[in-house]
Image: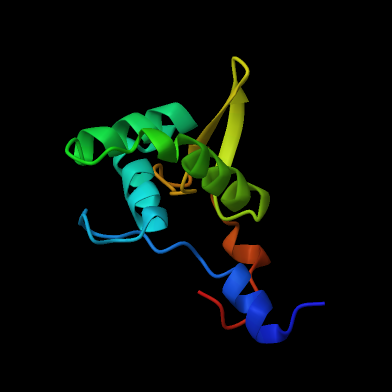
Length: 112
């Protein structure tokens, strides 16, 4: 059984770096690449990383990228859906405003 601290560490929200640096962790590079793509398969994230870091041999990292994306998806830290036999991942960003409405008569007193 995990301690509270271990649990919080395992399920903390993903950090999305604001820019790409060669010195960053592989995990941060993967998340940055996915954020740049918006929505992508494992192979598309791998290709984006190769594009961002062409001088580094990333070929051996394809399995690590797939494993990280799958683990974050299984923890609920990434969203995704299957399309043509491949999982397409995204960062759960809300990109469109809510088109619903709230009936003000049903709100609790004091809530505007």
